[in-house]
Length: 380
Image (cartoon, rainbow, N blue to C red):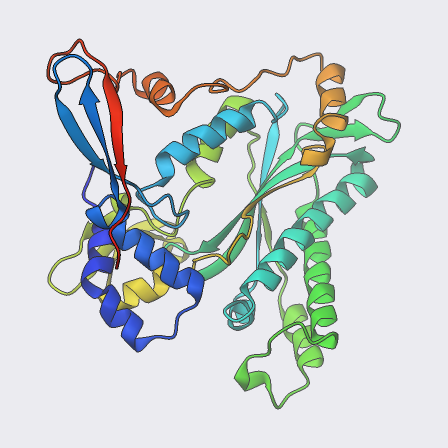
């Protein structure tokens, strides 16, 4: 495994950052988890061979969803589960993005506006599918909050089956090969729905207002800024088959703001990482930040406690899995496969994923390593 640059930055500069900034409880928890992950501060567990007596000690991982060190295994488990729920049909990839002027609202209303983003994006797809194609479809939506340079850039990645149930639930209707839903119509409905939700939150006073908006009519200014520019919903030209969908999901679902692979160095008082500049045709460039600024940007993307960043809608929603989703499998004449990892323990799953038996003693190559003791993290 490569060097954990992010952890080293947090370990060296986290205390200084905490002293200088007022952080939320969930941000503090994420910082502590990243700093202690796979160290003695996180506790440990020991294994002993049942034949030769060889012992090994392994430090516990933090399992925090914002830790870049802990996502691979979660990703594999999640992908295995989702394989049994995604219909084996073509999929369309849509991206819904909030305009930049709303970032100052997002920074003080994370949970509220992220929920609006989920609701408005599905509302647009569902309304278009019903009115344009006459079908009931579904979606798998994933929230991302970052841009390549770690700036605040909230957007939804949405996977939508290229088809759906007819109004009578008697047949599966595929959308035309070269056309799914009109992105201009999607954009207008999405924009209108976001504005509707924002204005509702202004009137019932659930939306916190940035300081510089205090002396203006917030509702009127929101209407003005919302309608100044067209909102763009991005739609990938090519459709994804089920195999590509799974690979795509593995790439996006458990991703955190930045991975250690993108970081080139974290020495000499700077953090250097690679990023794509989409304003310059997606060219790969280097960005250099001071450690304190790097931590600040990273923490922008810590999600509220218990906030669900992956959501299912329509025929893919959890409440419809035993009814409408099962009906869809019947109508397309396909069998729903059970998860591959059902009933397996961690060692067995790792063996399937890597081909390596982690329970085999590395010393005698014949005995089994068995857990002897768990040591919990020492008191602070």
